[in-house]
Image (cartoon, rainbow, N blue to C red; front, side, top):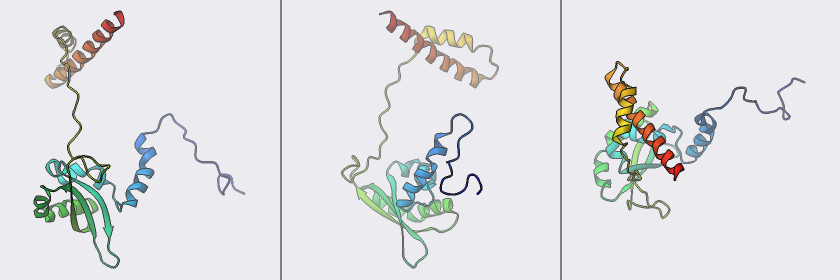
Length: 182
């Protein structure tokens, strides 16, 4: 009997440190997306890059259904009621962009399903992004100190980026120091 084969074989052990999350979740994401008909998960994960930011803001892919004997599938896209006619006019262009991901004419038709713009649990989808928390501006003393520290960098854009990062770090460290002293 050879070691490592058969039903009693142990799973492969990872030999080095941490693994990337994407490597651990790839199989699970693929299985979940295949249940909805997405053999190519890039349609889901890179939707905004495929169709553009304007369309991705008002539409989401839901599933892909394949006809029994025919070639080509139907992509169901969820959108708001007001945007559906506009997207219907752009269907040929959208189909070209999506089929470019597959490399052949995999999608023959796009079906637009209309819904309300908020809530997903009730069969509705939320299309706007979550509001971002307000950023607090770093204090002027931290900005000056960060600019002095980054002053030796020759590249202007890198120097500006380092100064901005330094100002954020210095402001946060001063904030935590003042909170601990109270």
